[in-house]
Image 1: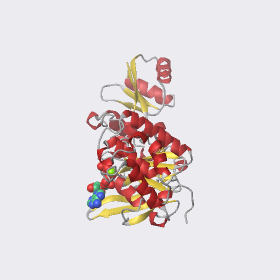
Image 2: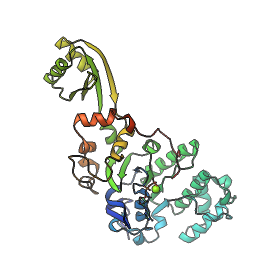
Image 3: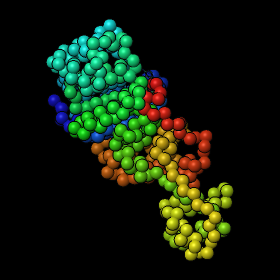
Image 4: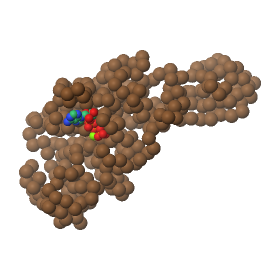
Length: 362
Ligand SMILES: Nc1ncnc2c1ncn2[C@@H]1O[C@H](COP(=O)(O)OP(=O)(O)OP(=O)(O)O)[C@@H](O)[C@H]1O
Ligand SMILES: [Mg+2]
C-alpha cells in the first residue's frame, strides 16, 4: 500500500481559498529519524499545509504524501500518521480513558492501548477525569495521546506547545526527540523559532505560503554572519591594508568605523599593527538565528523573491534537499551592505522577544 519509509513529501502544493492564496507552490521533504520544525509567522500557511497533508483540505494543485501516498490512500491512516491539529475536540462529559477507548475501537487497537498512551503523555492520574474539565495543557496531552493510539510511524503536530507549562514543554521536547530517535518522523509547526529551536534538527521555513528554506537547522546556524566593528585612527588606510591582506569584506560605517566580516579580531589587529595604524576599539557583532528567521519571513520579503534572487521553489526541491545546499542562506546572500543594514541597522525590525514554548495562543 505504501513504501513504509516514514517520509513526508510536499510537492508544488498550492491552496487557494477564493482570493486568498494560503499556500503557494510549496515544496519540502521531511525525513524519518528527525524532528522537523515547520516554521512561519501567523498566516504563513502552516495549518493549511498540514491539513492538506492529513487529507482534511483538498489541494488546489500539487501533492502532499506520507510514505509516497496521499492520506486517503493510506489504508488505516491512524497506524501511519498521528496528528494534533487542535486540542479541543473531546466529548466534555467523557473521561480521558473513555475518549481514548472510543478512538482505539475506531482504529482497531485494543482497549489497553488507551492506558498505555495515557502513561506515555503523563496523564495516567487524570485518566478517570472528564475531558471537559481539563486545562489547556491537559487537553494538549490528551490530543497527543489520541494521536499515539495507532503507534504511528509519523507524528504531525500543529503548534503543540500552546498551553503547556515549562515542565510540559521540557517533557514534550524529550518525548519528540525520543520518538524520532526510534527512526520515526516528527513534523511540528510553530510561529516561533525560539520555541522549537532546541527540539528540532531540520527546519522548513515558510512565509506567505512559500518555502523560504528547508534543511538542517545547523546549516542556518552556520550561515549566521558575524562582523567586527573596528575604530581605527585611519579608516581608509585600514580598509586598504585589510584588502591587501586578502580580507575583502570591508565596509566603512556611517559613524567612521570599519565593518569587517569573514575574519577574526586577532587577524584585524595583526593587519592594523603591521600597517602601523592605531586601533582604538573593536566590537564583535553576531547576527543570531532569530534575526535570520525574521529576515526570511519578514514582511519585506513576503510574497516576492529577494532582490536579485531566483523565484521561490527553485532551490527548495523535494528529493534534492540539504546536501545540494551546504550554505543554503547563500541563496539569499546579499551585498554586505544590505546584510548589515538588515542585521544591525534596523532596530525597528528586530525580532519579537523570545516568548518561549507556549507563550502565545494561535
Ligand atoms: N478555510 C479558510 N478559508 C479562507 N481562508 C483561509 C482558510 N483557512 C486558512 N485561510 C487563510 O489562509 C492563510 C494561511 O492560514 P493558515 O491557518 O494556514 O496559517 P498558519 O501559518 O497556520 O498561521 P498561524 O500561525 O496563525 O496558525 C491565512 O491568510 C488564512 O486566513
Ligand atoms: Mg496555524
